[in-house]
Length: 306
Image (cartoon, rainbow, N blue to C red; front, side):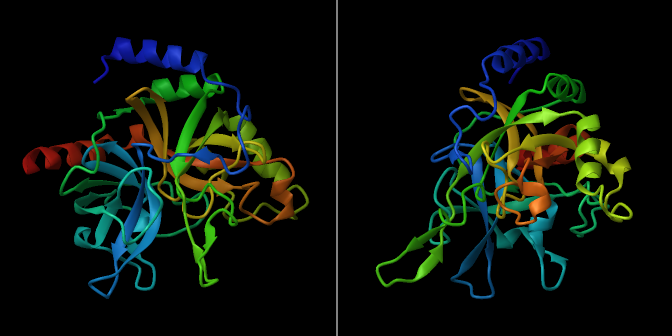
């Protein structure tokens, strides 16, 4: 665990040596094969021998996993899935429902969470899970504080996001010997620069400058409830399958967790709307410092299982 003074010193050091966005990056990010923090989620189907894949997630510590709350709902019935039907894949492996995975023991999410996908309104779409067994040997992450995040935003620092939707649609398909095309998701990561509110407001309003009025979902008062990063065709962006992916800063085995991916607005790699693609897009982050109660509940529950 970092002390406060050591954490500030390490963040300063880490930011000084982070390369500029776009350098040596490829469209769709880069491989996160065997990355210890990047995990996928699986869910028990009605068939007891079959599981289906879903969102991405972040391995905060060996048994604590952070994702988005909407990932843990039955879409057809709009009811919350029990922990017994949720599983975490092994970090940094190709998403494969036949592979090894660990069952979730307990799920914590905001009590007032409403399972809606409205663009800016669903600001509390986050969940923290505790698994029955350790998923992998990793150090416990340090949650970013509001002050630290504000400093990172002010300097336009880079944060990394890793998930299972960063690769292009072509990369996510393989052709089997029988000619059947199967969706095939790989762990990917990309580093994106944090941006300030004024840039977010300018970006969103300019995209709808030709509209007679701003869309109902474009409530600028909601902007401050997120942290924001900029994406481009050069850096890549989060895509389908990346819901719940973690934004973090790492140095060796140590990691500072910034928050959960809340999805792109204008992804240059995933969305076909021409208004977005030419100049890049934005991506929302649900900051973890807003949910210390969820982390505490997960840590307390984990302690009881040991």
